[in-house]
Every structure is written in structure tokens, then in C-alpha cells.
Amino acid sequence: MPFEQIRQKLKSPSHLSPTFGILSSVTPTLLVGEGLNPSVGDVVEIHNELGEKSLGIVTTSHNQSFSITPFSFVEGHKSGDKVYLNKSGLQIPVGKDLLGRVINPLGEPLDGKPPFIHTTHTPIIKPPTSAMQRGIIDEVFSVGVKSIDGLLTAGKGQKLGIFAGSGVGKSTLMGMIVRGAKAPIKVIALIGERGREVPEFIHKNLKGDLSDTILVVATSDDSPLMRKYGAFSAMAIAEYFQDEGYDVLFMMDSLTRFAMAQREIGLALGEPPTTKGYPPSTLTLLPQLMERAGKKEGKGAITAFFTVLVEGDDLSDPIADQSRSILDGHIVLSREMTDFGIYPPINIINSASRVSNEITDSEQKRASQKFRRLYSMLKENEVLIRIGAYQSGSDFELDEAIGKKEWIEDFLKQDEQELWEFDTTKAKLLEIL
Image 1: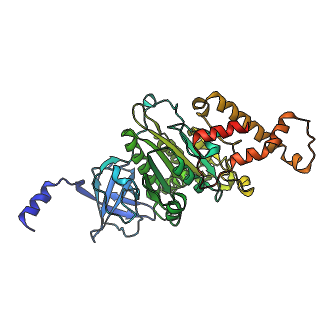
Image 2 (image 1 turned 180 degrees about the vertical axis):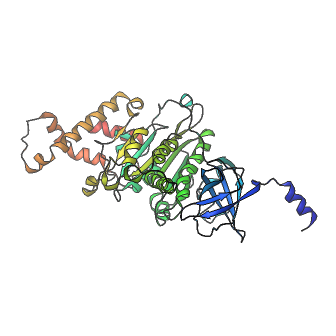
Image 3 (image 1 turned 30 degrees about the horizontal axis):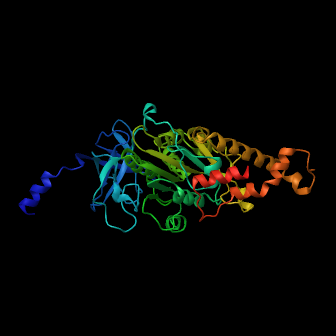
């Protein structure tokens, strides 16, 4: 090697520790190392005899050994492989170069385009914004969907959940929100979904337009650690743009797959299973992710939509139940409405936005309450109306609901290609009522 090359190599600081440990054993889910004294959460780099490298995270620490959960899989590792401590920690590239790109949780391009040049790095794991630094949610965040803007109005910096069973239409609704949202930056995390759904989501739901969007992808065939940190990586990117003063739309599909990844990790480490096999660490991890969204005083806001896959349409599922207690609102999708051909199938009776009363005017508030009441009366008396057992004049409010039934159902329906301005939605709602 020429002398100048040796000098340059010596001058460039290494991100790896000068000392190294070795793998003492390899289990089906974990790697066990010795010879280093890392902390839980430290990033390590494992080198085998062929010079191949892989990343992992220290998940447990004992007197003489430590356990590593790999970002890849345990295949290809064996006792005696060298383990180095990564001094820079777990970081991801951030910057305007990421717009229009599809990346994995480690920030590596998945779209075949050139690597990033003008980017900086930021830690993936950060504490949420402190309570006293949060801004008051006092502005409407329009998403272009009538039933959300009119009846479940979202605020800039709000955290909302989209609760749905499989095949009800949450991906379609996600695409409508991404295309209709008034946000200059959009960060989408696709966690634990099928690989074929990624190009479908880009071309079908986003219409191939990624100009203001960043996609972070960890598919179901990725390791549990990749699926777990995919959500945190996407949130770190959103926080970077928030600190730059942008209002960011953050969407994640799905929170349930994220929780399932932590379940796999927790059970492999020997944590006790609780309801549906979820270990305690899963329920601890949910607020650590979701509380990072919100409005920051003097900076931008992250308005977040998390989809929650409700198994068997059971809203008492532990992940759905815990999520509802953390989020600022929930949008429940109904399989029954899907069967009736109403899209998007938002069940407004079971859905709620906790900030809508603070950000809408009194006129819209009254109209929204009346709409809910009339729709609720129609659902309660649906069987009586269908069999002709209800006599007109028995209940004047129910008569009004029956008279406006077509208009009410028309307001709830919206074509996938159709996007409404907030003022138009509000005028339509007032016109009906």
C-alpha cells in the first residue's frame, strides 16, 4: 500500500472501538458475546472470517457476557466472530435529499437510485418533546376526506389512530389522506407489510407521486429488529423536518406489526408473555414512539396517523386498547359499511377526535353534533324503517333523519380519486343540516 494511503487511513477516525469481543454462542434468535462491556442499547458490528459485516443491538448484559439481537438474521454467524462496539450509535441520514426516496430503517436506498450526498445524520432513538415545550393544537389540519374534515376534524400536531380489520380499506384511506393533506413534507413508514404492497401503495394509492414524500420500508420478511426500528427511523426523519420549521404528515402502517416485532424480541429475551403473548416491553414501547409526534413550540408540527390492525374486528385487543389511551383520537373503519358499499367506511359513531371542539367554530360544532345524532337515530331504527313498522309522525327528529338519509349517506361516501377542500366540506355539512 502506498505511504500516502496509509497516512490517510490513519488520519480518518474510525467509528469502531479499537478493542473487540467475540461471539461465544449463537442461538436461533440471539447472539451471545464476550470480551466487551457494552451497555444495553449499544450498537455493535459483527465481522466474520470472510470480512462480511452485520449490525446488531445489545439487548441484555450479564457479568461476563451480553446478548445481541441482529438487524439481519443469525444465519451466517458462528462462535469466534469478532464483535466491535459502534461508537457513533444508531443514526440515520436526514436532509432534503431524502424527498422522493424509498429507504430501509438504516437509511440505505431501496429504490435503486444513487446514494445520498447532502445529508447529515441524526440519532434514531430520542426522548419525546417535554410536556412544557409542546405547542397548543389550535389549527385545523385538512386531509381532503369529507367525513374526517367535517365530523372528526384533525388539528395540526394531533396523533390519530385508524383502527380496522384486514381488508376493510385502511390502505386506500391512507392514500387519500397522503394525497389530500396540506403538509409540505410527508413521511410514511410501511412496517411489517407484504413486499408486493410497497410498489402497489406507491403506484395505486400515491399515484406514483413521491415528490414531497419519504418512504421508510421494513417488510414482513425483515428481522424483528428492522421492523421495530423502521418506525423509530421514520419518526427521526419527521423530527428533523419539524426542527427545520416544517409541518410534517407522519403515517405508519401498521402499529400492530411494530408491536408484534417487539413481541418476538421480548419473548426471545425471556420476558413473560401477557395478554395475547405480548410482553410488558411492548406496552412500554408504544408511548415512546407515539409521544414523539406533536407540535413543538417555535418549531413545526408532526401530525401523525397510525393504523392499527384490529384482529377479528375486536377493539378490546390489547394493542388497540393501549393505543386509544395514548392517541388524541381514533378513526374506526367498519366492515359492515364496506359490505354496504360505503367508502371510506368510517364509523363516525364509534370514532372521535379529541381536539375537534377546540379548533372548529360553533357553527360547524353544532352541525357535526346534529349529524351524529341523526345518523345514530337512523342506525338504531334501521330494522323498523326497513320492515315498515315505523309510522311517520311518531318522532319528529327521526322523521328529519329519514328525510335526510340520502344526503347523510352521500356525505359519508367519497370516491378514492376525489379530494375536498376544507371550506367546501364545511359548507356541504351546513347545507345538509
